[in-house]
Image (tube, rainbow over all chains, first blue to last red; front, side, top):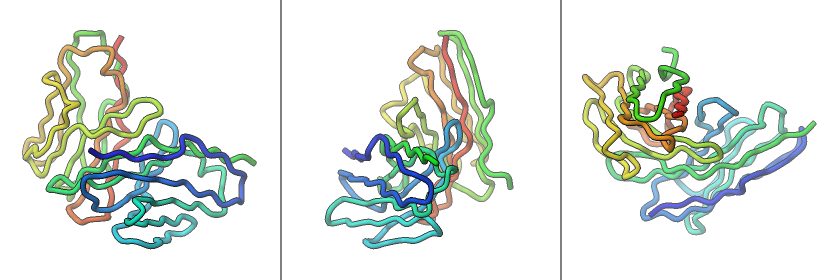
Length: 111
Length: 114
């Protein structure tokens, strides 16, 4: 089976840096993705790591260590609009390419 | 292209009734997924289509659930004899075959069974 663990909540202040961790257990591994979801909104794709290392996209970076079954999402220069839920997801492999999502981390950015 | 569209946005139904949701994916995306999300949880995979073929169904998808994607374009998800436990947000997503591109999700249909 597959399971992903994330902290349930994180609080940070505007302008700060926050790291959201994700550990996973999968029967096969084909990459780690991150999605953002605002309350009542659709999940939106943020980042993907297929190989070990850091991927940077603007204020967001994502890191993967396959040997540790671990990844994180790093958000820099936090803004109020970053308050949302963040989900890590693993690709299950095979023909379907389906994503298995974690339970999510609710980020609250305070002024 | 305006992204993935889902209809309706909200649906309130009485227990035992049948409901049908529609998803219009991004036109060039050949892969379409249905997920279910309850409060405080991540999306749970329900089923997957590649073009018009339904290639995978989750064990979460009981016999009361059926999905179709005729002609490989829009998709419908039907729930028969709804139960209160079916209350959730039903999300549709589409993607290209390429790895790492990510899914594009629709805004979902929120189902409330009373």
